[in-house]
Length: 336
Image 1 (spheres, helix red, strand yellow):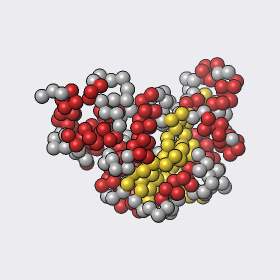
Image 2 (cartoon, helix red, strand yellow):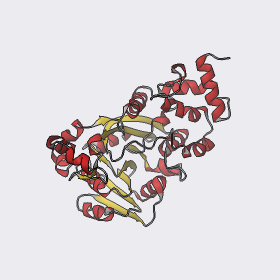
Image 3 (cartoon, one colour):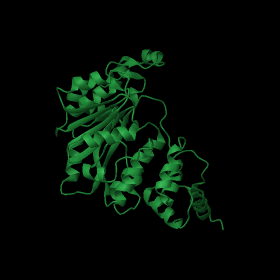
Image 4 (tube, one colour):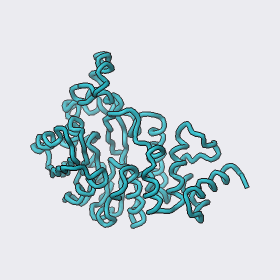
């Protein structure tokens, strides 16, 4: 298996990501795409070469999330590629768990459990606890026990990973919405194998598939930097692949307040819908908005991927995003 990591200006977190891969029960090839970093990422990658089978790719200028991942997968040599981000720890059995799902199967897209470490948010370097700019006072006020618990060190990774796991929470970001989205995605992947919209449960990190299947569909869409993983998964399933889940865990080392919310960063919508003008794609934002405090009436909310499939089936003949969403709300509210 090849683990493909795209990373930009997150050297200290990347060091910990690579340390977690050096502690895997199954040794992977690691392809690191340093996507135009201006920090000490190149030094971190070079230092890890003694512990890992690394292919290092250094971009002078950023290619973006999709472009960097595509370059990494093209250079990988493993039959299976597993995508990670450079701020994400791998549980010790991550590679082994993914490999076990692919045994005897040649058409799977395997998504693992994406957890997060909230305590790392104020740190520039989660190993030393050095603060990010603007977080100096917050870090200085942390009680010693809390500070020690929040650190992610290479010693913990190698000798006491259960401490890291014990500090983690479900969902790639903190908050009710990301946690609920994680829960409904994994619920569908593990218990609704016939659902036709499982591609919507795809993840940008902690997801594996056969390299030849990835290359056959052209990899990630070059014009998408958010929701690129779902668009890829949709093409893969259209090409005969099947989505499934695994309990293999990764841990996102949080380093910002909030997250890239596709309900607010809407640049993806025109490209995604132009490629896939379906009711399922049109209704995805209603699914996400249904998880939080929104103006959507309860009757119009979508709370699961099977419910998304059913809602889309009722609107399948409509030809615009606006028409699909309007028809869904009218049907849900019993309007004529």
